[in-house]
Image 1 (spheres, rainbow, N blue to C red):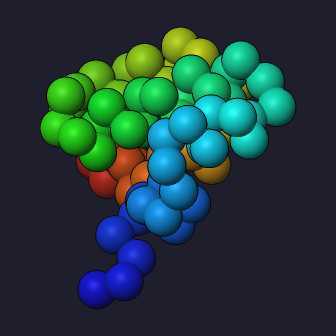
Image 2 (image 1 turned 135 degrees about the vertical axis):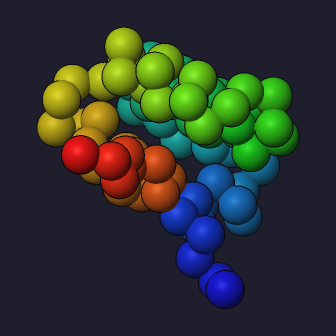
Length: 74
């Protein structure tokens, strides 16, 4: 299983490079959250809640899709 719902860049790039590549504070914040999630420092639910606070509706749904965090209930 190559794609686990986590963007390739996150898996292959060092955190420092990722954060440098970010064009906005929002992007770097999201990357930091993603890295915490990857290290199991925060849960899927926490990541979803925090990202929702940070991102606009459209960006957030794309983010959830990229990270495989879409809610399947409902």
